[in-house]
Length: 247
Image 1 (cartoon, helix red, strand yellow):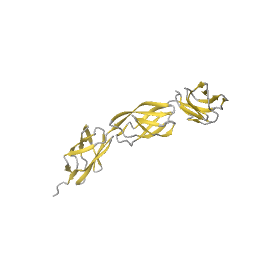
Image 2 (tube, one colour):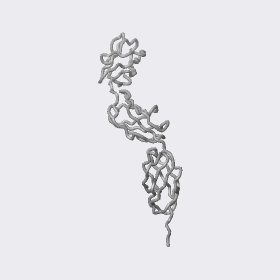
Image 3 (cartoon, helix red, strand yellow):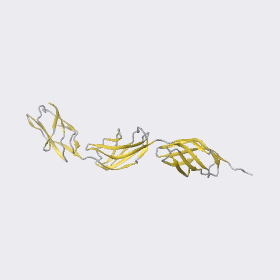
Image 4 (cartoon, rainbow, N blue to C red):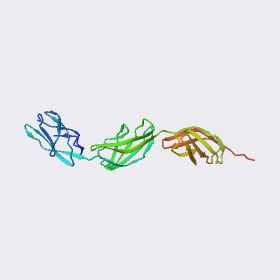
């Protein structure tokens, strides 16, 4: 006589189906000493809503023909979350997010706002999940759903990818040291700027502009790449290094 599912929240409320034979006319289904509410009954199955409880309890079905052998049902507490890392990522989604805590073994879904993602359970204290795409930049609540219930409390912030529109000036000596203003969008979380693969010191002026000091380079045009928490943007051949004079 199988029982499905065989685990549920300590708060009760889990829909449980018990299958077997001669189950018609079921008058009682007990989870331990507590009665469960019967919601459907046929000769081969009885569906109930589990009562609240803790630990492992025997489940029995009583019909006019007697009481069945017991099956085990496991009560699971609500999950507890302690950390979420990283706490932000690109609006397009795709970043791997790690959640730690307790009671995560039965995690079936992680919601980012209204969007559900399927987690990979590492162990009872850790799971990973791929962040889904966000509807827009900004914070959303993160909740974990397990057999024991749902736990909220974390926030994940979606960040739009940057754009690089222009540089001023667009050229300078190959020795470097030129102060360049980079104009674009979503630049406030900039983590690096490089000229042809060489990192350059920078300061964030606003969400739409950066002040950058060019590193030394080789004469010719190079790509300029700005990397932020929301991704990276490249202006192809955006800056030209000028060769110094020779006599």
